[in-house]
Length: 466
Image (tube, rainbow, N blue to C red; front, side, top):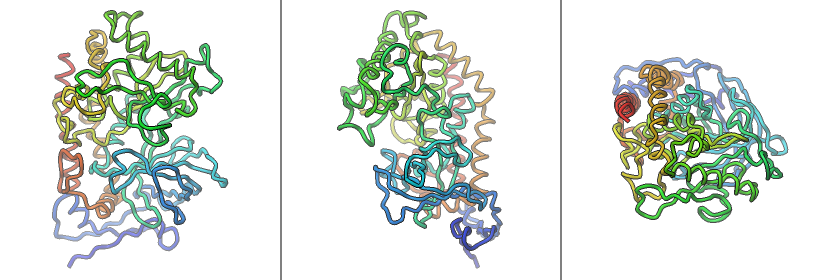
């Protein structure tokens, strides 16, 4: 006879129970390894459990802006590491249609004013994200690419697996992460004040992004208040699409007219230089405007994962004071690593930057930048050198597979895989835009591993014959 032992969640432990959780591994076996007839009970030690995040909205209903007042408790190994006030709201665009929501958090003091704090060992800040992996049934695509980015010395959001409970309802495995913003420990650029409108003060810092419009947008769609438009139509576009650059920092509501003029002119001059006959000239060409190494790393991270949204959505760039334009940080790779069934997003043998050729009618297209950069022999030479260096280090098969195994082991030891898929019964079910549907968690992670191996092999050949 089989018995199912219910795992008591942390908020009950804090008030009633001690440190042992009994978990029936028959459920894990069904999720990960196929059917298993023998029942084994395992003990999950408190230190093996994921950090627990408990949110109480006191009857308030979470919406997509504005943030509502709530309280949060964060615990690890049954010890509370933080309790306090927060503002919380839904976040994301397409992901808001998923039953498993993602959330934006703002830590606050007793007067509900913004409060910088260190959470789960991350540097102090006030803005945080709880990302809920849903269509990504491996649960790990974002963590994987962010870790790889930091491994190659490119800042990406610090991230950690947690389990989330809201108003006594368990929500599953989440990724707690830093929101991308200007900060000495995040996007480390100069704080541009609204009275800095001339001279070298005007040169930075700025953050721009190519993305969908969302949240507080100062009007409908892309407009002169929130963005500026490239003068160069995306290559292969068939529906009159344009490339729009959103003001991310300073925010659209704060950036001055002079600052708008400066950064839009800077990007326009870069594009003019890149499109010119002298584009490879070190003084007259694009090199005068961009940090080439950051563009190369951004390219390699998007190509490694064949990010179907790469270069055209969730694409950040920044310019510091007296410095050149840099690409990054990377953001939002839940549809990468073979998890998209459209526009060849599931393929291992296509260039992500060639998206426009495959899906020329899609509203969001890729700027002409990447095709043009790959016409420069010097850019190609540096790209090859960087790829081949990374392939014996951070991008080696052993390194990437070890990361995937480590994430899996962390989730298994915590009993979090069973908990998540008990709550979200989605294994074996197609969720947009899955390219692969595994019947078990092991099948999902095996697909991810095999996809990565095939992708690395293809890129080795494709990059070295550029």
